[in-house]
Length: 533
Image (cartoon, rainbow, N blue to C red):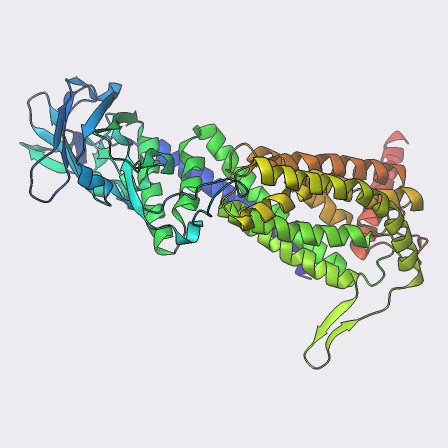
């Protein structure tokens, strides 16, 4: 009984979750103003306060600065960008470290903020690509690369630009690390809020030091004024990033998540959250209905077994490729789940069962299933003649002219290019079978519909989430296939109450839906007649 209403219950929960998140974001970006002056903490300086920045660079622990810089006074809410070059000793290029200390002073030369952190530190280098054929010796793979010194070439410091008062007992917890209150006569004030965290800067801001020592290195310091909402969001993401790091999440995945929140405006951010939740909802429904269909289906006639085999192989290759490319876990995890389901579907299609006593048991396919296999083999044979030469030619061209990180990377790249380039062709055998049989009765239409919704959502995410270009183009490929499926469904309508050419009826849910639709139509017609009378 619960399973019948599970979809509706989940939809209500998801709508409530979306409303809660939208309301939470509204409170973050538009906090309630403190009106009672006696119980409020006021800003100690106006947002247009004149400030300047002084910086010191240390390569050793002796307290002597190797480089200094000072800016002119500028408006705090206008921001500032300093581009300079630091003199560095040769020892820095031998896995050395460097520390930057910068001080922000008011127009009265009083210190209102100071910060110290590493700007040169050993980090894991990015794997380098090279030509596998012309290289004299193989480059080390990513897993064996030793940490080398990286230089922080770009540092962003964020400052709250809004003149806002906070309740004494209502300071947002994410602002506590940056909040410094001072007592001025009869009122309580706080210093300007600054935030900087070089370890959470984008990866491309950290540049690997060249092999040959140079006298100077480029460095850019930017002061970025933010509204209260964006400033709080930065602090919240920093705390979340620390928690994700403690759970073993990679820095690149954390950076991908942060970029979704920090590199988009508020309206697009809320849209992304809503779309993401519905994507998970449709993912669940697609997986649920797909598993339910294949679990209850004994006769798979009318379904292309070679298409199922291809989907199983392609999802395995795509999962390995996405993992090798270090794509976002937002993309890798759904790909892994799809891989497991496709492998299970192939076992159901081939009637393969696993037992603890007898091992692997292979069942016999029915006469109707064998007839479908003959049509499938006829069409697939023609596609193979086209596919194999093109795949081999593309693999040879990639090996001779394209750089790769390793032989494993080339194999995965070649395999995934074949999957993406010819995946469209290898999804067509099912279309050919539908055309020959003039029937689409045996397809899991509920699962296909939910997958189609997710395909259109993937088109939206293709421009937001970091992913390989080939995977991005594959999202649009699936749209074309679904449109053709829908055309065939319109061309070959299905009566779920009638036994089809394979001796099967439609699923109980689809038959009930069709019956309920007819009942509603008949009731509306009868009510219309009564009104006319």
